[in-house]
Image 1: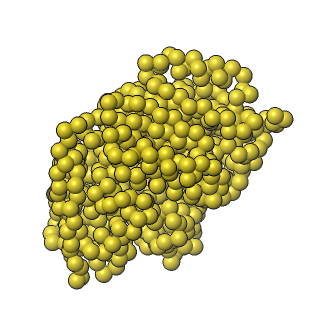
Image 2: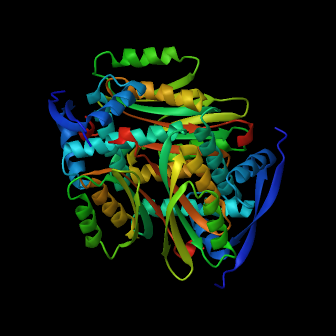
Image 3: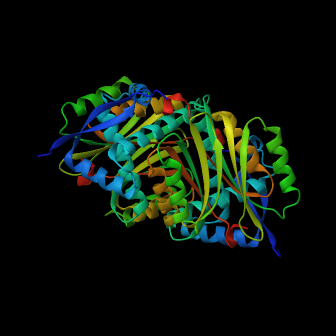
Length: 140
Length: 140
Length: 140
Length: 140
């Protein structure tokens, strides 16, 4: 954890800074540096997603009706097929019919997207969404 | 579960249908109806998100460094503040420093976004993302 | 134009700054301040879009087949209906069949979205997309 | 224009269809087929953007302060550098200080993104956004 914290200056119009300070308050950031670092990391993640070939972490959110025949089996089967990629899963019983499943997937952006597509494509899955993030050294 | 399945026809150019069939294969859908229903539900979710005042379900993905002072306490505190909204949480140890936390949040789109903003704003959270989905009766 | 330029400092891990400097180079920014200001303004625009009730500027991109009966008339009619909102239009002949039309629309985010939806919904419009930006005083 | 229109059936729950019909009305679509075709084309465009190497059309929206030294010259210079890619441009005087410029760019998704990044990176450009669309044969 021998991370070196450095400092750099940003020149900015007074009014733009005022608007940013309001945004910081609204978004509950402790201070400007914290907010700026988050903006920077979000841009880095975006570029990694575009690149497609970098190691990332994906969260796949699935909503499905558990009454649909064989859907749990099919989802489980898919997850085992990618057991080296799917790190963990969270299951929530939303109501009498609907389940929410959140899967954490590791791999290249392209692989993660493919796994997400396969799961969202399973008959009975009503809605699915994928978000990606990263944790490599340059995200310190 | 007395859901009535109905049928409607879609007129489409042959070539556009060919491209769609390729997309269906690529996205692992079983058939056209399954793919069309998913497209419809995704549009409905989008409109609900825009509206802001409808009950939805959010998945908040957070990446943070657990070495940052008090971060776990702060995250836990925030979650308890919204304990009636935060349904469930999944924690993954990504590496020696980084944790991934996925929270399932219920509420109006605006409330979910606010909770997500608060959590992402916590000092030490490196990156956060929110996706929303819905499960109400019109998402059958 | 008596804009006051001020300066503030950002503390950041050395490695994260290195990654940011690579991003700056890749995105062709002249310097860090320029890149940071763009990130800040992009966040402000996002919040304005979410809010829905603030004055913004939208660019609507439409692709359509000009052979479809009455499509030009219908698009023109829609544009005149909102003549106080639609500032300007650009028309490009893409190929023998396809036209691209880009409209610049002024108004509240919600109004802009509605105008865009109406235009994209016109029979014969194949694809449409809306982006929003802002120019008010806090975007200096 | 010897396009063959074909027809296929979609089976769907009655309630989901009701919600879709409301969406169709809200989005001003003439009929279900028109709405479905738009959803399909939007998915195809998304996949092309992800692929990166397919011919597309981009619309780049730029907001800038024309008082910034040399900004018009720099933007013009960049545009001439890519004169074989930049098809057309629309300029709007937003207010005393701000200009909006919309550029239509043709090329591979990756090239379009690079041109957009370069333009957005020009000193004085406050905000920029890129959207992509497609017109090839499979978008009939």
